[in-house]
Length: 128
Image (cartoon, rainbow, N blue to C red; front, top):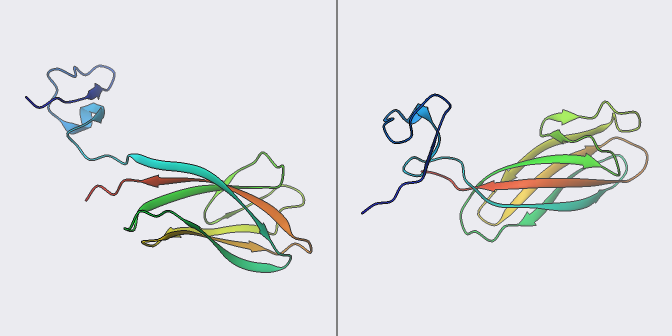
């Protein structure tokens, strides 16, 4: 007997629905499942563009996403964004990517002093 876990959308019946779009989650269908998450901090030198890496040790290339904050600022941004907060306008989170060994974070710091950046990252199961 195959067991299935499923959660139907409001107004749909999980016991009788057959359309995959009727479900919030259905264990028989591929979804982006978070397999790991964490935080990491880096110090970025003044007036520099840096690529910082974090080993994931999965042995394959996972899908990743990340959000960055600076120093004690509570605002977070995703890749391809910069801060509009006073004092951090020249900090850019360029990209997050992965290979079969590492997650790579690319950051530009156009400020005249070094900054501490904080990342929350998510590694997803690749449903292929």
